[in-house]
Image (cartoon, rainbow, N blue to C red; front, side, top):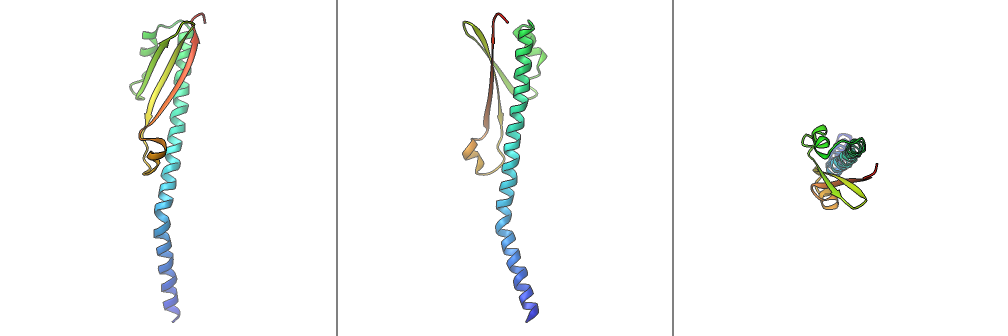
Length: 121
């Protein structure tokens, strides 16, 4: 009788594990996706700061494009010239790996950072 109780407990533990495992995997993948989004945002912030710094130091737009290797990072740099300032917009897409999380963030997650620099700087 005692051996049968042990088997029942082991079977119950196995069923609980099978029920919890997909939830745990989704949680871990979700944390990884959010981490990748945050990392990509940090990279974009660094790159847009570099773009603004190069422009402030008198580099031309063509020099900025050649200095930064945006294709390697799959980033897009848009430049909008306004009357008093120039607006640099850096965009990238972060693919979402977690099933279901793409309904919350969209797949791919579009990340966009902008920085404005006045012409007289």
